[in-house]
Length: 406
Image (cartoon, rainbow, N blue to C red; front, side, top):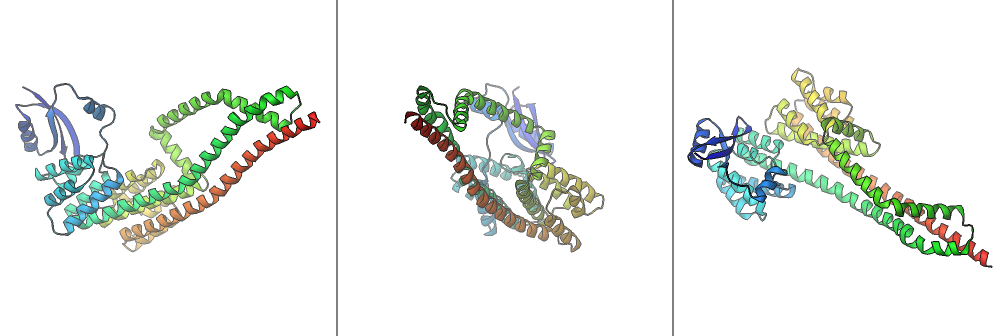
């Protein structure tokens, strides 16, 4: 009897297994009788294709990117708000999306929904595309009979997150290009221009100025050790990546980043915006505070703040206030604590959290603008001085040769 590998949802958790059965239909029927929602059932035997090997062994097929996810969510919300049923809305979005990967993922979700699964359970079967936050909001919207407005708010949340991230990346493009261009200019002077003058100085036999000798020694050392320095840098980056993959090292690194002057303040504003917007969106959709905090901490991207949120959730579960518990960590801006405390006192935690998110988004944008405004002239002046120093050392050496000849 053939064997089949299967995946299914059992009480909100994805489970896997292997079952012997006459055919795939028998596997599905048996799992459904056990109260499980089947996500996948396929023959276990046979050789895997190269694509299957890559997908399973090297980390899995990629999910939807953020832009596509926001587009799908917005279109699905629009279709449902227009009175379409879920199956027709999913079919419309699937047929009109231009991304082949998105069509495959949405088609699989539609098949599960048509087989009797809830939308949240179907989304949970695609964790690479839909986060716990996403599925949690959809589950709350389905339970409250307000799926269309929930998806509308979720689309707005995704678009705001993408807009903030895109703005931060765009602001860093020019300073990064400036640093790269200046570094390449310095390397060009040391590795290609300076060696052209070295034989001339050697033939003249003149005693060169100290600055010129230091510059020439540095250029020679850079040329000899350059490849080894690049290899060492690559090894260090790989080592750092491996260390940061461990929670204890990542926790320490995230805590240190939050304490760095200027950059730490920007990170605090960004993390606070993500926390308050996620928490406010979940609470607005009717999710209780403790489960909402459990989902929100996973969306932060900073383990230090996530640990503080987890401790605050435990304290809130015991009857303590959320804002007071978060304040004890000292990792979030005072504005965040103040607004959350006001929301708790007025029983308006969800709208106050969303208001705090808007304020933190604006603060992060303004801080990034000020940081770039200060960094660009600082980089320009610093690199200009370095290049001017190199050229000045060469000119001084040339003048010393002229004096020797005369």
